[in-house]
Image (cartoon, rainbow, N blue to C red):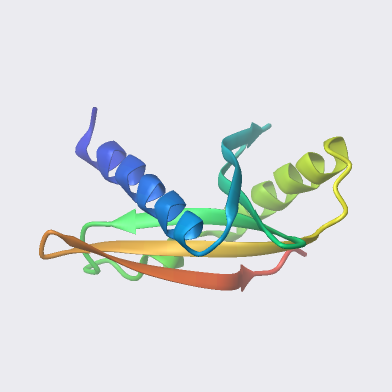
Length: 119
């Protein structure tokens, strides 16, 4: 497997562990709908947190969260709308990013709540 794929998988697991530690329930991982893949769907109380995980080995090219593009956001919103509808959920939906950067063999995790809004 390519090294960046392994880093991505490691980042997703770190994000899941982080969310669990912060009292979230993990509902789905890698949920797919049409062209979108939602990394993590988690719930905390009456909030459905849709979490995009971005992991980088360096900040040389910018912050991980800067790599979530408008087209990806549009696809995520469409996928989550479908998920909420199909599962007949009555929850507040929030879009988060968990940005992870590998630094000196360790991982720095930043949880950005309400990182972007659906439009």
